[in-house]
Image (cartoon, rainbow, N blue to C red; front, side):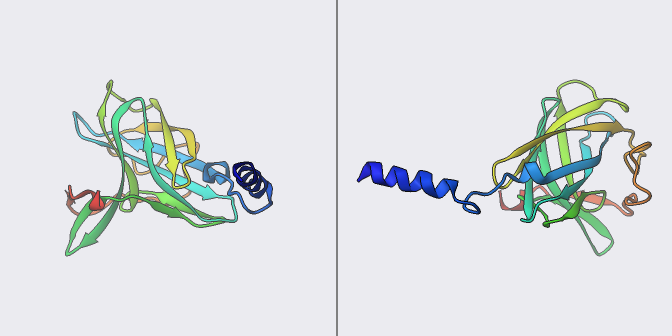
Amino acid sequence: MKAMSIALLLGAALLPGVTCAASAANVRVSHAWLRILPGDLPAAGYATLQNLGKQPAALTGARSTRYADVMLHLSSGAGGTNRMHMVNTMPIPAQDTAQLAPGSYHLMLTKPAHPVTPGDHVPLTLTFADGSTLRTTFIARPANAIDAGEPESPASNSAATDGPTAHDHTHGGR
């Protein structure tokens, strides 16, 4: 009986459409950059994520050897005050793009192992809901940057956030 169960499981795994391709295999990253703030203030990570697959994907976070903590955040505005809070996922629709951008979803990087300065290349490993990962490199930009800079800069897809920003430490139910 045990041998029969194992054979059935192995056979099911080989059927077309039964297994899911890893999200990371279908995701392309472009315009990846970090906004570096002075002192011990956290950095923010932005990028364009293109899902070439036929199934939606979901970014669930990231990690880096250069920072102790990397969290996925979402900014929102109400009553003239912008807030950000930690979230568990960012959807990436099938055959579409999603943005890590100022005023929206972004990565919050804290506690750098060593100072990060504009021009540095910072490796990050993005993690997805299906458990897959994608290693990519973000370019560090100064505090006044509004995009990835040349030559990768998109025509105009980012704008600086207006108004004060308050940080919500409730961390999205975590």
